[in-house]
Image (cartoon, rainbow, N blue to C red; front, top):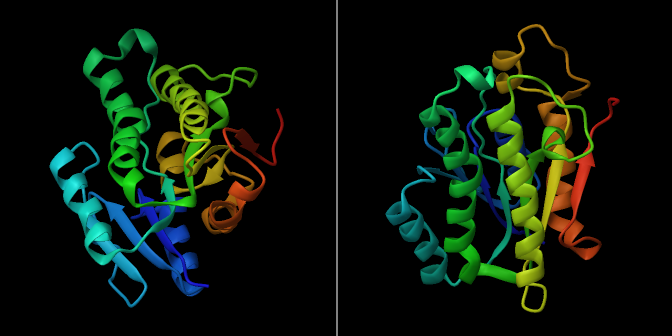
Length: 225
């Protein structure tokens, strides 16, 4: 059965691969990104240039589902900003910019789409292994990893708040994946999984994971530690 899926950060990496895989499976995908040049509209792919910090644009977007009376089956909050810089050299503006996208933007689109999300639907927040309390930490990632820690706690809180009415909320704490962002941050590093491989897992989880999980932060990494 065809589903309606909203994906943020859809122009490259895991997000782009997720859009393509979902469309190939016959699902309607609303692909959100500030830059949609890499996305072409098809019967199943609906690219939209939206800044997650623009509350008016998000409200307009959410209203389209209300007008069409089309419930959203899954929201994948994949958009993310990354910074690899020593904490002492990181400005307040840089630190805040990471939180603006990774935490506040994620919260804003989730809030706007809540009325349109199917009660049995699923919100999947893409987090990071670096945001988990017991994992190995790396210098230079203070802003990024701490923002993902905030996403994890937010996920648990929203699952509790909406446990009676739905939708379900879960987060996937991803390990290294071979994406453009990884290459920019760590040139030469070879990740064990490709963007397409991880996207296939995320898509399946977004459509079925709520049957088994709610309020969970699930590590998804084939490497150790």
